[in-house]
Image 1 (tube, one colour):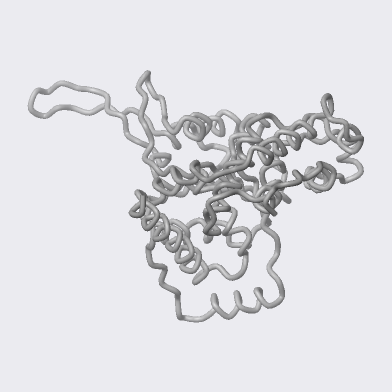
Image 2 (tube, rainbow, N blue to C red):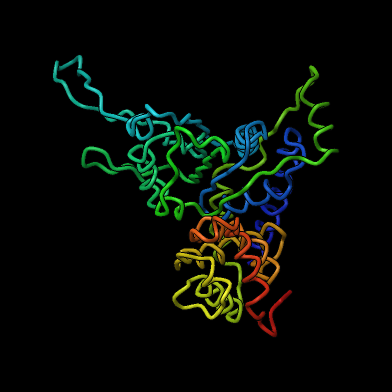
Amino acid sequence: MEQSEKQLQELIQKLALLKTEIQKVIVGQDSILEEMLIALLAGGHCLLEGVPGLAKTLMVRTMSQALHLKFRRIQFTPDLMPTDIVGTEILEEDHSSGKRFFKFNKGPIFSNIVLADEINRTPPKTQSALLEAMQEFEVTYGGQTYPLDRPFFILATQNPIEQSGTYPLPEAQLDRFLLYIKIGYPTAAEETAILSNTTGSKKATVNPVVNGEEIVALQQMVRQVHIADELVQWVAELIRATRPDTTTIDYVKEWVRWGAGPRAGQALILTAKARALFKGRYAVTMEDLQAMAHPVLRHRLLMNFKAEAERISSDDVASHLLQAIPRPKNALS
């Protein structure tokens, strides 16, 4: 047990080093980096949304360098085909016997970290090629199933302002993303630092500090983090309160068309456990749950027409619910 405790402490210390290495290149965006790493620890995937030029691609690439994992970038375009993602069979010939056979040539999805850049620029048929990989961590082609390497982490990006020629992700696919992270503009001080760091000749060197085996070990440890029964009950009440047909909260009935499903509760608990471990704790607190509520619920609440007209967002609903649902009396703060 002592050896396990020692190993855990060493891995947690490496998480702090991991964030430090990424910040050699990425200025600011502390909360964004933290949420991305939390999603990785929880074994899920991220959808990143932000206007062009906010270093979404650079952030993901830098993370892969610090993690010492296989990284592939897929640029989603209107003419991208599912086989461009998962791979295809090619006809080969055995030179010794002269016999021909089909061999599966693996696509870029067979990596540890996959950047799905501008995922909403490709048609639904191609978008759906990611579904099995995201949920089952495997790919089926020609009746054969091919397991994906672990860890497997998809980070998809989309641009919120250019909607012409785009294909919005359907709710079923949005729900497969553990977190929906919105990236905002940097502060004035951060922007000055970005300009200084990126216009000179000196480039930062990112050193790998965590390998794939260690990430898998951390993902297993996340599920062992303790969460009190009263906090699990609070999560269940929060998720049920998002549904207009079961909630008692008028705010939800007025603005929400469809609420979150059970997967949202699972995501909230898992990411809260991952956040606790990231902070060096072995038990979930109320702070962990509240910190992860917005990126978990953001894409799982379908707002009605009235809400869209009044510019009431799913984040507004989540904020209201966090205030409205009573906190457990004996919960850790």
